[in-house]
Length: 144
Image 1 (cartoon, rainbow, N blue to C red):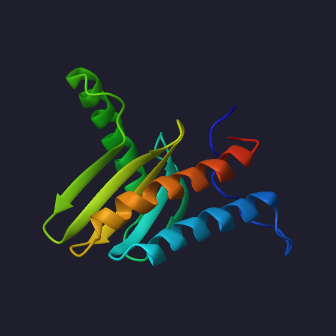
Image 2 (cartoon, rainbow, N blue to C red):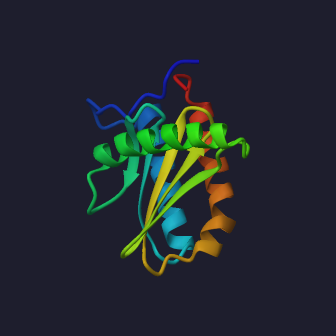
């Protein structure tokens, strides 16, 4: 299995399999925003920090992707050193919101940004299904 491949631009009006995959992934991100109060933006990236797709208006998705990869890498090492089991998510509670980074399989990351009113309980309830959906779509990609 190779690395995840970011969507490529289309040269004609037909929808390529990769474009269809991008659309499916974006729909999953949008659905999470619609189901959980306070989710404002999300970015799906590879574990090495390359953007796959984003549901974002105010952040720079490529920067978020790179920083999320670094965050997850360091956090996994902390979890290993602390001997507390496999890392599930990293939550940063900030002055006016939240940033949450979740592993999506072994090769992808989901970074979710939420405002101060983010419904954490709803997020924890909905995020496993979102991760599972993303994993299924990514697994169907031959480049994954």
